[in-house]
Amino acid sequence: MTALSDLRPVMLVTGVLVAALGAAMLLPALVDLAADNDDWIIFVSAAMVTMLFGLGLFVASRGAPKGLSTRQAMLMTVFSWLMLVTFGALPFLWSGIVPSYTDAFFESMSGLTTTGATVITGLDSTPPGLLFWRGLLQWLGGLGIIVMAIAVLPMLQIGGMQLFKAEAFDTAEKILPRATQISTSITLVFIAMTGICAVAYMAVGMAADDAVIHAMTTVATGGFSTKDASIGYFNNPAVEWIAIVFMVLGSIPFILYVQMLQGRFRPFLVDDQVKGFMGFLAGAVIAGWMMAHFSENHIGVEGLRHSAFNVVSIVTGTGYSSTDYGLWGPHAVAFFFIIMFVGGCAGSTSCGIKIFRFQVLLEAIRQHISQVMYPHGVFRARFNGKPIEQRVIASVMSFFFLFMASFILLAILLRLSGLDTTTALSGAGTALSNVGPGLGEIIGPSGNFKSLSDLQKWLLAGGMLLGRLELFTVLVLFLPRFWRS
Image (cartoon, rainbow, N blue to C red; front, side, top):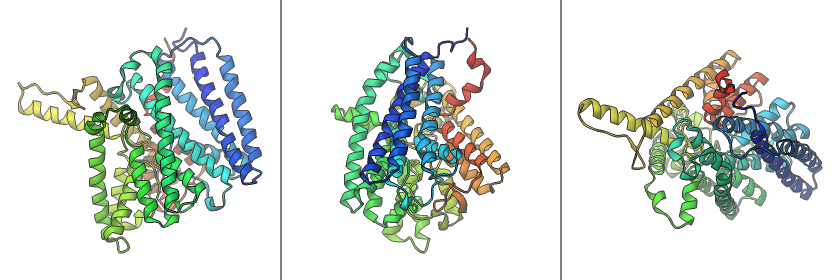
């Protein structure tokens, strides 16, 4: 008997999530109905199919034992995300906005992983329900990522995420009930932040529908826009500053916001990860400002705004664009290529390698250098004032190695598929880091992924899932040992 002989807990969770996604499809149906657009029928049809499948899984898994083993949690994470993406693609396909299921799957994967890469052109004239669905996918994906990072990944001890293991998650049996409690608080914070962001957008002149959709994709650090020109379409400095603020807020651990609502402000103020993230952003914005300053169209305060917006957008993995920073010169291209890997904080909607892993790596290097200089001294690497266990350091090191290996392999496959070197490298980086735009004329800030071949889109979609689920969760499923007792 294999360790995964009883898959009912996996099916139970997946069934609930898929049924919930189906119910969410009724919201864009209402949007289209209000706009007198016939696409509401498509969303209702997709909702019925999705809910029936989800409820079918739920009914088939009745009597499932409570709790999840580590292996079941890994399988549930990957299987549920794949099922959500698979059914999330139906409205795109049935509406005819994309020509094939490959394109629909790519758009759905980009949405739920909050990547923001798109194959849809003509967004300015796209039906309102589809625009709302794209925004809602990213919003739901962002919320799911936060809960996964707090409840599941620390228990799986993936990539150093055990640093954020809450006492309530000491055993697998406690995951589901405790995740439900904590996700309720986070969801309320997420909804409130989205609402405040939408009101702020409307206050500076953005139309209500655009404001709501952009608020969802800003707080989720997703980057889907209602316009082909992204945020640059509005040509409004106030809109860009609001986006900067909420992209940063979306990249900070949401559990800290919950603690602040409970009256505990100290964790937010002393958190090493938050301080490291804000410090890195400040340095990167200044560096970008210097590059923009030497670009003939971006000087002074305008250059600062363009630098802040595009640097924050890329580092947080949002992927909005207000200008083509590829025109700032080859040094700027290299700069944005590097910072796309960094990412925000663990426990946020942000993506990439994550700031805390760089901090753990630097602490490990500092400890090693100190030990070499003073062989008889006792030195401990620390994070948030607590000693870092060697297995955490090893886990982070493994993540770095696996991330770079995956990046190189994906870039090689994209290059062999016919893409030029710049597009292949930035495509692999932007997919694994869940950023959105790449570099170059094809997939750069002013480009689109529509012209890529089906093979290239499937490769990039796989890269998005791999990066979003922290590599190990996906790759371990390919080990024969995983399926044995």
